[in-house]
Image (cartoon, rainbow, N blue to C red; front, side, top):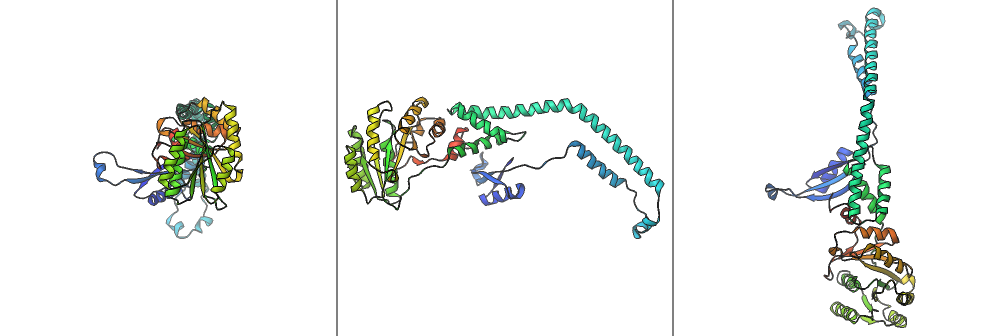
Amino acid sequence: MIIKKFQARTETEAILLAKEELGKDAIVMNIKTVKPKGFYGLFKKPVVEITAAIDDNDSYNSSGEKMLSELQKIQEVAKPAPSVATALNPNILEEREEPKAENAIEKRLNDLQKLLETQLVEKNEKAAGSEEQAEKSVNRKNEACIQLVQDQLVNNEMDEKYVSQIISEVEKGLPREAGVDNVLSSVYQRIILKLGQRKAIEISEEGPKFLFFIGPTGVGKTTTIAKLASDFVLKKKAKVALIASDTYRIAAVEQLKTYANILSIPLQVAYSPEDMGQVKEEFSDMDLVFIDTAGRSHQNQEQKEDLAELLKVIPKEEREIFLVLSATTKYRDLLKITDCYSDIAEYNLIFTKLDETSCIGNIYNLKMHTGAPLSYTTSGQNVPDDIGIIDAQDIAKKLLGGNDY
């Protein structure tokens, strides 16, 4: 694979440059705006830089083929120049034969060819040892690049078994002399592929959709609901209602009431599955109904059963479940939590508190462990801001060490 960067005033101009040099099959891998650095950069406009790639399937001639090609050129040059008469009348060549001159030239050329072939064989024999060393050097370079990327992923708290899986898949498709750009690009694409399609909340024309938010205490379920509900009410003009089923925490109910008053949307409290059934009928004309559930311990079987009964009230085709997890929680605990909720129902994943951690490997780990779709991430307490649909490209870049690479 050939990877090159192109800069121009606009994105279109940069893409045209890439297509012109790499061909129409070139693929644009990344687009960013580059601001000129230094004092004089203050007076210059930023440019658009794209990273483009294309598969390199062209085969190169061996050294022997190249020398024989050069020999053919020598043969062409060594042909005797025609006389003036011959140039004016090419038929003279057929009538006049010069066997002695032609035989002499052919002999010299044959001798030269044998000499070159002999020198080529000797050179190849002498270079056999150095080629072996060169091969080892190339392998060491590839290994160093791969190790660098592997260490970065592990440092970002990706599970080593998932790192090894990615590296193993990438190594199979790497060219013989893969630079850092090739390795990074291959790993980057592999991560995005494995993170899969994201799951966003969408309004259905077939009736209200009931959205359950489940998860441990303190992960930010109530605040996440407030952010999403505000976005749908203020920006998408949807008909939204709230249900508080977290009757263990009075503060959670009061918090939801505050948001409901600000947004001028209805709120009901459901103390039991029976209450949930009644509220469901009341909100039959809504687009979305956000349901805040109580934080439950993954080690408490009774609480798990209570949640399961609450979920059963809403048919599967009318509900969506979002497991809310904190990005700051220990990986071992996250595994237990997700396994616990997997026993109850299928869910989508939301990760909160990304602003409180520098490592996001657990997002990838939990996606691989559960197979559940990724939905949203939050990075602060501001409502309705500090939330967004998960960005696989952004996650991949951060796992590899930054926003740009």
